[in-house]
Image 1 (cartoon, rainbow, N blue to C red):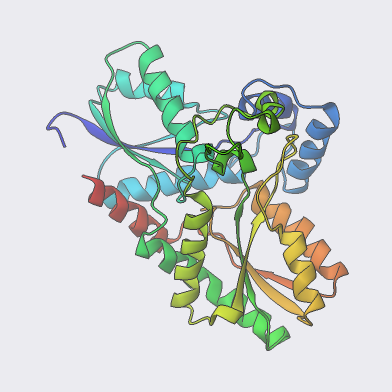
Image 2 (tube, one colour):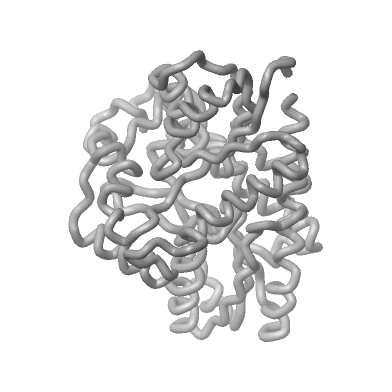
Length: 339
């Protein structure tokens, strides 16, 4: 690292502060493509169900609150300045880059708070950072970008620590209860690679209709590592918890509303199969998210729990990592290893 001022920059997705900001927020998520009114209203309903109102919450929405808390704890651990920037809402990456330039930062270690590497997450964050460095006033600083840290052992340990009680409660309700690990789904086309035999590609007729509906994630010159890394994280957690292969399953959650296929299997499909196999309870943990937000507090705690109940399944969710000391140690270890 240079002797001049350095810092850490954490990048996260972002979330609106008010219900009335939903349409504007979604326009950032979709790179300007307007969403139908019914989609905006549905997402307002979901955010309202987890506490978002027209008056900003004193502590901020969950994603913002916990991300800032993680940065605070990380700063204490590292003894260095830690900035937080969001790709789709305030504080935007461009805003924080301008602040870092004004503060005289000359080098940054940049980490995306999405451990599994994907063109839909880390790829978009890096491109947004590079764009902001070019377009904001002031001299650009250099940076090291950590494009995925799914294999960090302390990350698996943090998840394992939080899974223990939920799994024990599920096994009390059903001695055969399995664990269902989840991660956010991504559009199928983002993990496809071009072929020379007329198969799926970014430019074939089969995918051309999708281009206007989704962001440009960049050329798919090699397989996207995301699905593999998600399952590797789950397998590492399962091993730490002493689970047999037959004790756990994996599904992708929160498929989007864009007009194209998203990767699966879905949580709903998996819960249906588990109920059909005779299970009466299941412990669920999302290993792609590091804190509470709408995909946890609504999709799992409300939607999936209600869906499971209709199948005769009791759903036990592992707490999100949030301010887990082991998570903070994991992030610090990743950053220290990148120096």
